[in-house]
Image (tube, rainbow, N blue to C red):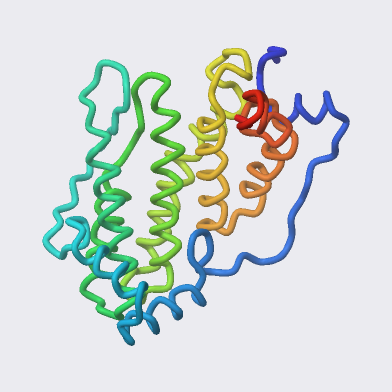
Length: 250
């Protein structure tokens, strides 16, 4: 193992810290929104209470919140490198699925839930790989986190078949997660402080979110332990590594 490999094993060996094991069942929906959040949103919007209703109107005016949105799945998504830079297809569809999922949870309109499910199923039945140069790590982290949130919102919808939820969870755990954990463990064989904190953070967020989506406590704990004792700039020990005199910690 390279001394620069920011792996959890090396970090704990260096610090003498024991791995943390969390416990208890995950509460769904979790991640960005709980059911209590959705209940509050629905109540405020139904009463047209301000400023909540104005915020909802911004959501409805957004071009992603429309039933005519056409999913654009691809077998391979590239970010960086020499291949076609088609990653906007992925993040655009995720934004549409998320917006429609929110609209359903707030209004109860199942047409929007069906649209979110359509987008989820299109990708889980088509996507085979994420590729590119090192920027693929950002794609897997950012979009993995975002797409897991969509799945977490929609998991309780009766219109999402159990087999389709399983297929979506499989896509997240078999395509996104391996890139996330490989980045945290290797940092592309660079010095573990080479990357800005956001590269670590989006990978951790994706692993944690996929862990919740898949009810995978071991996966969730990997993100927790990296944050507590990892070697990269996203771990807590390196969270503030430079102080600009008098005004800002970075």
